[in-house]
Length: 116
Image (cartoon, rainbow, N blue to C red; front, side, top):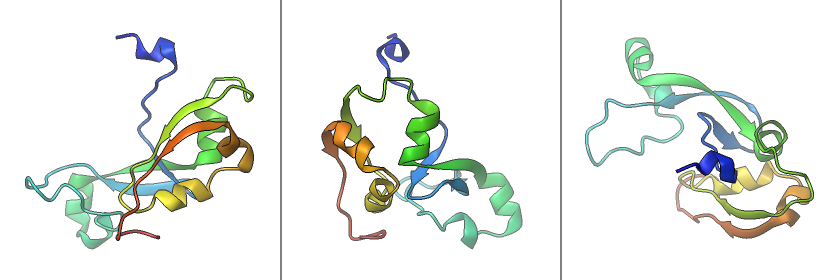
């Protein structure tokens, strides 16, 4: 579909208010319990963590744009869609005012879970 030529990219990473690393639950779940939450790997024993979790980079929105977005810093961000199971506010806290001013359409969810 040539989406990468149109500026759409997929990154195996997490986005939050600060950059770093985290364990991410990658599978082995029964249908209907896909959302295990950020702390799900911490509740597993070592053998389960090795089987079901992988270490991924975590970027603040600022760092993500700095390292992954190739557009000119003056170009608009047409759509910024965030869906991180209630931690959407944390993602926004990792942005700078300059980034947020470029966003034409912002979509996020407000959820009873997470940091709201």
